[in-house]
Length: 303
Image (tube, rainbow, N blue to C red; front, side):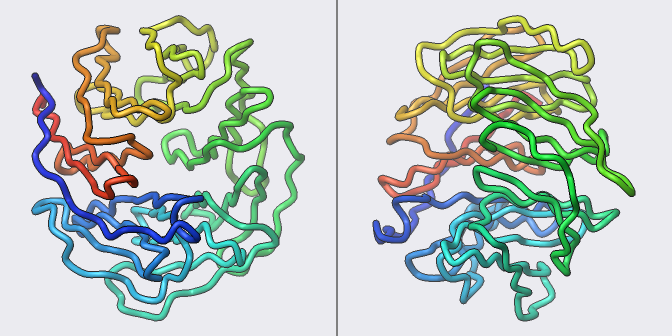
């Protein structure tokens, strides 16, 4: 087997009033080898060293924010998910007071075009604004509920996955924003989607358990493989062309060889997996198990 569980990192128990409705979601900052995991029950964010897998410290005063996201090239940590509608922005390693960002709705996902200082902020809906002053940028609303957002520097575009109906929207960044592609998944309900910019592929994980793949331009999907469980989330390891897949209400972590279109193996974690985080630097996958609570770290030894 190419993927091996190397450790379990014990996490503090969560207060259901603050932690259960939106369990933590972490993010890795590659250059400082740090994984940030918000702890809304304690109002802080844990820092885990991704080489040693030890908790090495915390960012204090992060309140009820439960979701971390990172802009790698600007060394920025965004903490979101607080019901008061305020996000916090930290300059990693600077030791400065965080900058608050206030929105008219509870922000969950933040994606930043750091060259132009454009933010895409979303929960079920989305909006564009300037960073850091928050000035709104007009862009026509697109039907659907937001499931995921990202900024792809190779495509120079914002990527938005929507549901009801399921579609992947690619919005070109620039002096003015423009709709580049609007990709339909037909009758499939898609829970997770990835744009592989180098390979020019779109990969989608569906409610019916299928993994679909298509070229980025022609959007003609075929089935890579099918599972018996609804897919919750996928992350992509471009170095070895592996897809890591988790499922709703499931302990299973599947590793799919995207190039050869086959399931390499399925790892069974200790309890239901809520989220997975990929650390490209060390080729590790972290599975977040809120009911334990713990992180389990898996090393992909394929490269």
